[in-house]
Image (cartoon, rainbow, N blue to C red):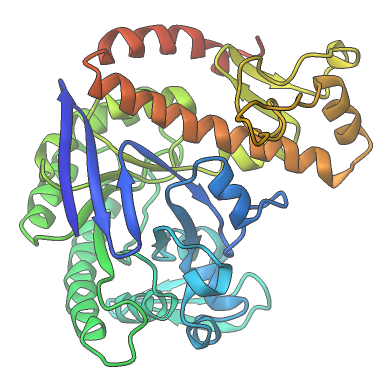
Length: 393
């Protein structure tokens, strides 16, 4: 791996990263394809069209359904889903703790729980998570961690974080072993560690200092956007990010709104993922630079405009002709009709537009940082995006 910071502006950074599966320009939004597919009928060809750099899939979900050993027989996740760019797989830790229910038992060796699909008993620990991710052959693997509730008290958080540190040491050791085996799909698989600690400053900082000494390929801030306020999340980033290595990728897991992303970039984060664009799109909620729109609203019934005028996504701009110009896009009225009629095409259009919007937003962020225009661009964008938390344009 090569990670080189191209430009900084205050704490904001834009970097160029080389991996075995291609390059990544940061800040980057990773498009979430939980089970090796974006919900909403979006193909890997579509991901190329809308400017996706990194696809994210889920270790737990692929393990319990279809199975990582089967995917390994196809040569790994890249060949299985026909995606030739970087893939990040999360460790399954969050899903183990969010989906396992009351039957979950946390031990030093790992976690015992029941599948949310068929109820079968499953054990997953650091070694098992690394083995699954090795079978998938992703570009970046995430360390197996415990994701405690953000607002849990100190007596719960501290031993949880200490166990996560011990698990990280085991993950690093197991990944080194797996990458040395002759039948490993991706012998250059990278490992990102995860900082935890809820919203307790000193635990977060102490954990960041400890894992920073482990010389990992990248560092994530986990356990946020799970119950705390936006202000609490920004505060934790202010406190923690300065204690993570400056010359390594920084990843804020599961975040967030466009405004969240801009605020986090301003605090030194350069990797993001979130289900908002696809989940909201499937319900007719679409993003623009002027606010979030609910296409089910009657005021769009006769609206001939595209979702966002000037947008170059396949839905707003239409297809690209051989001469480089674009055909006309689809109207808000037509997409509203499709959603009201429960036609899959409407859902697909909304998801495509939203993912393009997020991908293009991070492209705009990169340009602003690299062109020494970050502060003015940020302030103007946040002023426009304020409507996201208050309703529609």
